[in-house]
Image (tube, rainbow, N blue to C red; front, side, top):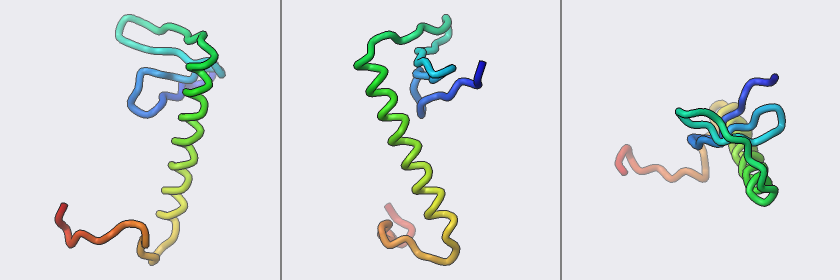
Length: 74
């Protein structure tokens, strides 16, 4: 059994290629193909975003052109 991969801060977990909703009382497998397709796409988008952020952080000394400076204020 592979380690479960949680989807961000949601109760959706991908375990052995199958989506589950996990809570305090246990886990329920998801069987709705439309819903699991959306979860797959969302997981792919999150993964791509994580890789993009990691790539940006790996570039030493380059200021981020896409993040405007607020002068330390919000």
